[in-house]
Image (cartoon, rainbow, N blue to C red; front, top):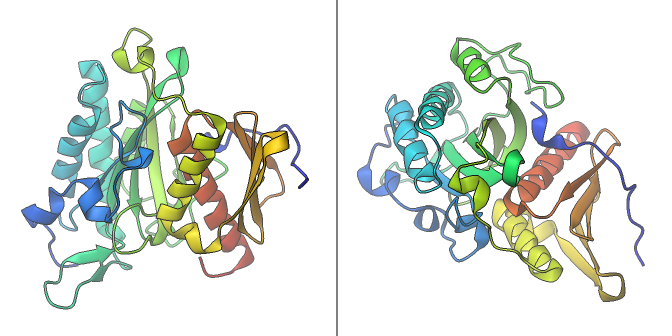
Length: 304
């Protein structure tokens, strides 16, 4: 049997061009924009999936983010004041993508973006009194405007220009951060960063009460493998199942192996610490593993 990592470990969730306002592209659903469909990652926020949409490369990005946030949380019973706060913060994060468009690639003929464009993501994390809405805005620049990589260990506004993140810090009560990741949409999944905030869902809301799909251990691993493959890691991923131990092992790269056992996913981070997170929130688990992959490659100086 393959060895498993230590049982303990902190939760990593809290670390820190031409116009494209062409209505056909910007209004496209995630399945059309990404070329994939049918997985949990493409399901609605309420169903436990990730709402992912492209953002324009021009000043309309803030308004688009406001509209998309409302669209993404519709039907989960989020109170109006939290929707307002989320709309405001999503707008601020989207506005910052105007300074992070150096890695966007356009098609030769139509000059429409095909990879590296900004994206807005929404999904639920946690259950009951710990349920929260997570909003992330991705861009293909790995650092801030100053060129520094985001500090993924500490929530910090150091090196970030403008007042946008000060607004996010205040409205989210400090529940925000930034980390390395890969895009979800586009022709291929470009490396970059995600800046995020989380809003705690009041216990009386529908989002905190309704049950999302419960998957058996093998279904969960199958879904996780598909999610990682859709983020551009399929060519590196090797899976080994140990039915007798009810365990699966996913080898992502030389420096990253994920053990899925007893409803949890575990791996060793680039700093040597062990991470152990519940598989119940598969979208967030996959995101943390992609983050670990990108962080490992950044630390080793290898190409992502």
